[in-house]
Length: 69
Image (cartoon, rainbow, N blue to C red):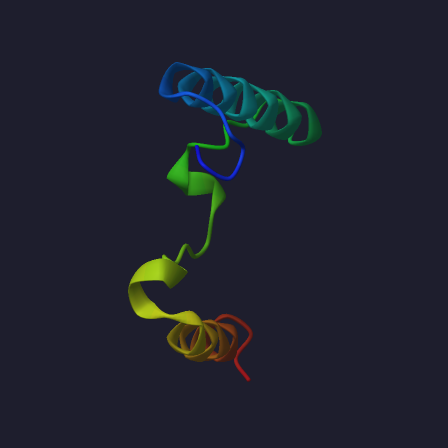
């Protein structure tokens, strides 16, 4: 809110609009897919929780397994 200099209600409205835009974009380019459906993703990571370096390690390990490298 500080970064965009908006009130809390304005921030909630901005989040809702952004989520709607993302959902519409994803649905259009995936021919009906939903961006919140976990089936559409092979791997998700929370870099804020584990850090960038650990994410890189996990992604590298995943690629080795996924592509039999």
